Amino acid sequence: MIELTDEILNKYIDRELESGDMRRVQEQLKNSEIDRKRLAALQAVHKELKKMKTIEVKNGFTSLVMDKVIRKVKAKKKDRLFIFSVSSIFLILSLAIIGYALVLIVGSSTGGNADNQSINNYINYFVHILNSAKELLTSQNISIIGSIFSLGLLITGYFFFENLRQSKRRLSKLH
Image 1 (tube, rainbow, N blue to C red):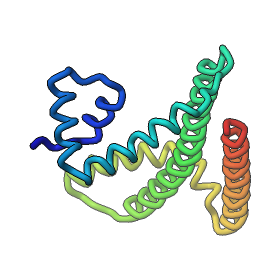
Image 2: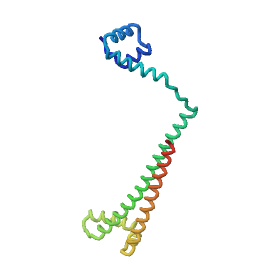
Image 3: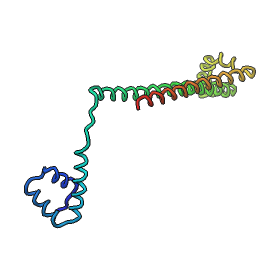
Image 4: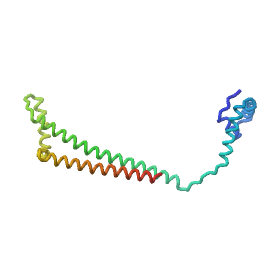
């Protein structure tokens, strides 16, 4: 007694088995009603599949699909680059503000040992670079700078959502 898998039964239907295997399958089918029912179900599926028409596609179908896939991949890369650029700008601005705050905090403290002297040399270098920023960050200009950052955030948000909307539109054209 052998176990008849769907693969063996399909080969039996298609007459792809060798004569010895065909006889063993026929013998098993005589002895097992369950296998006969499975064979009948597979034969019905086989019959229905033969009735189905094959769909012909245009000659350039494959290249059309590949072009759409490539455009989709490029759109994703473009979206990632945009998000990375916006994130980088905010990260750099945040680091500059944190650095300036550290310069003010450390610059206001006084120290006399050698470690503090080397730290003070680095701080003086940053103070020299950020001196113009220090003049801008007075109490009078803080609200103006905050408004500029808010406006920048709003503009960035607009471009981000506009880019997202265009990406969705491009993806819907692909379907």
